[in-house]
Structures are given as structure tokens and as C-alpha cells.
Length: 460
Length: 81
Image (cartoon, rainbow over all chains, first blue to last red; front, side, top):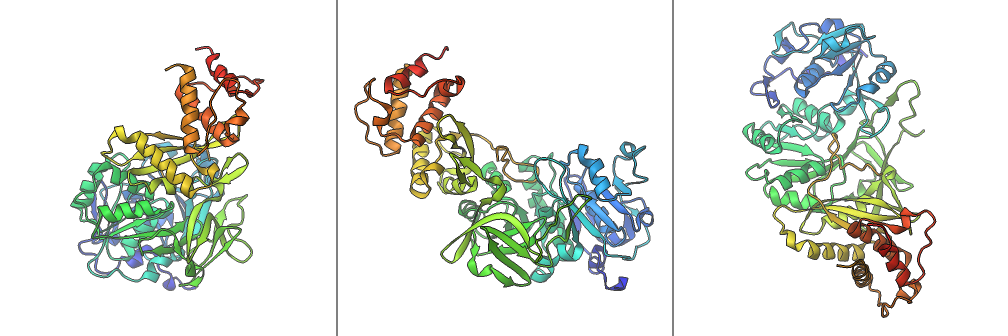
């Protein structure tokens, strides 16, 4: 393949850059003339052909560095902000890293990495670079313990779903996400903003939710994505008023009917859709009919994405999946036929499939397997509930029982707690097998959400 | 509220939820005769632990599960405060 056939991010930024910007809570960087500017102090040529670790403390410089490095570096490994630095040595070895882009060059002095490049703002003028190669994009899985797995993608695979959807209609979108763009869900949004001719408003972990939403409004955000946990937190905060995005997207966790309905009520003029994607499986599909789950006829081959259900879990084969786990002892990412096992358990009811939970998230209740998500979906359907988490608790009698922590919707009278508890239990008994009905329901003010935006399930 | 009345109230509440018709709760009624299954007892023990702060059946390794309602109540009464 000749280099001319390879499209890198810079090749999507060639024309009509006027009025586009990428911003965070502190800076706004215009994308006009971005190709003749550098965040790398003009040292991009030194990184040609390198395996680059992108280890920056903010998303803005990370995004700008991705634009420069794609098509020049041999591979780049994106480090999410919550990466445990104790794992860095193992990741550097497994990915064959020989250069690092950082904003803390002192920390890398004397490290084994020979080439250290500092990313800095403001941008400096530089000669535009030309795409040399297809850069391998390395991302980390968001698992909770141990060294994260390195997942290898190409830009083509990462942008497969974006290209398939075609250009956005109407005026150029202003995208935002509650995710970090160094994770798969956030990167999808960053790439959408770049490819769709739009702008991007980045999140900031140190910003209060109310301030974040005010910034989204000020910057004219029209398209925004987050996990159901992100969205529930926004709905609880009361900050959603007066924010009116055209498109609201959920991904990364099961979007149950309660959160879809809650968003439709909060944003009556928005389209609300949920997407199915994972770091390994890529973007599977989007569902825009306002209902949880997905139509059964999505199985089979649809727009180049093949899906099947084997042993209860969703398997995906497409050009959008990652191509490999990277590292010395890396396992195979796909089965012999090229399908990625998502580990997401689905169940068919009528002409629709519903997500039941994660295979790895099953809790054991007296020898019976229970998906906590299935219980939460029933609890969340109560009109006074905003969010819940079911988990197991040891019992001297049955070995384990289900307990649930529940957050009530904002403004619920605490005096109604007992009445609401009885109603929740009644619903659970009507809709769930008896061992899945919570033995104890606690009302709590908050539930932990992981840095990846997912409900923390420490006991799973 | 005394420990005994907390226990009895919790039994009645769970019986209502589980649609179990309780016989009269005398001390010598065997737990089997309450109509509670093991899940109902598990719920009872968990709720009482939240309410009283103790789970007498987990604290003591060799504690035999009580046979009668009276034994069950005493298991909670006899836990040192």
C-alpha cells in the first residue's frame, strides 16, 4: 500500500476549518491552521516511526498530540488519567515503547525511555507534516484490577462507524462527552468531532457538574455522550435545565428504560439514542427508537457488523473491532472465526434482545447466578428512583442474599422512604424470581462511579 | 423498643412481604412451623443485623441455628451490648 492511500487524522482536517475549536475548562484552541501548528514543540519528526506513550495530565494536549502523531508514529499508546503508574513499566515493555510525550519531562529523566518530548501550550508554528504510515492506536481496557490489557486498533477501525453514518446533517455539530477521550467511548466522540467537521468540548475531572454544564451551554454543545451513570448524575444534579442538546447519546453501560425515559423527559426536544460499543468489539450499533435493548433483527450481518449470540453472550465480527491484544503474554482477542466475545449477556423477549448483565459481574445467591443489572433495572423503573446498585451480602443461612442501595429522585420527601421501599419490593417480587428480590434496601445519597464512568461494582 | 419486639416485628413484616400466614408466635413454636423458608430467614437475619448491629449466627463459629422462636429471640438478647 502506498502512503498516499492512508488517511490519518490530519487528512480529515484539510479543508474548511473555519470556526472549529477544541476546548477544555481552561483553553480554547482553534482548529484553523492547526496543521501548521505544533503542541510538540516542533519535535514531531523525531517521533517518526516511534512507539509513543502518550502520558499527559490533560485531554486537550492529548487530543492535539493525537492529531499530530497519527500517521507519523508507528504506534501510540493512550494513557487514561486514572492509570495506576505502577503498571507503566509493564505496559512500556509490552508495547515496545521507545518515546514518551508528556507534560512532566522531569519524571522521565533517567527512565529507560530514550526519547522524551514535552507537549505544551500555546501551540507554536511549524511546517505541516505529511502522513507517512498507518499508525497503530493502542488503548487500555478499563478493568478494575491488575495490569490493564493493551488493545490494538487502526484509525480505520476506530472510525468505521463514523464513516458508515456519513456526514452530520445541518450545521456542524459541537460534540461533548463526559468521558475522557483517552478511553474508547470518549475517543469515539473526539474522532466524530474531527471527522464530522465539528468542534469538541472536553470534560475536566476537577470541574463541578454545574460548572461543566454551564460551559457546555456557553460553547453551544449540540451532541453529547456519556454513560447511563454519567447521565443519572446529571439528572440528579438539577443542572440539566436550560441545556438543550440536539442529540443525547448513552453508551458503556446498560441503558435501561428508566434512564432513557428520564432523559427524554429532561430533554424533550432532543433525540436520545444508546450505542453499543466496547474497547475490544468496537462500535456495534446504535439504537434510536427510545427503547431499551435492541431489535432481534440486528443479529446477522447488518452494515458490515456481524452479530450472534452464543452461550448467552453477544459476539461481534466487523472491521471495527480491535485487531489484537498487544504484549508478550497477550491472549487471542477473537475466536478462530474472528468474532469478539463481548462478555455481555443478552436475553431475547419477543422481537427484542435485552442486556442482562456482564458475564464477569454475576453474583452468587445461594448457589444461583444473579445479574445485579437485572435487579437494578426493575428498581430504577420506580418513578421515585434515580439510580440503584444491587450486590450480594454474605448470609449465614443461604450463603448470600441480594441487597440494594438506592438513590431517590431529587426532591423526594424522606418521610415517604418506607412507602417507597415497600413499593420497590412489591415490584421486585412481581417481576423477579424470589432469590433476586433484595432482602434489604438502603437509601443512599450517592453511589460510586469509576473514572470510566461506570457504576463501581467492587463486590462483583 | 426491646430486642424481642424488634425481632417479632421484623418477622411479621417479612411474613407480610412474603405472603406467609404466621401462626401465633409463641416461644416454643418451632421455626419450621412459622412457614418461613431459608430465604425468608436470611432476609430476617440481614435486616436484624442492620437494625441491631449484630448477627449472632455469624459471630459465633459454632452457634447452632435455633430451633424455636424463643431460641431465635434469645440469640439476639444474649449478644453482649
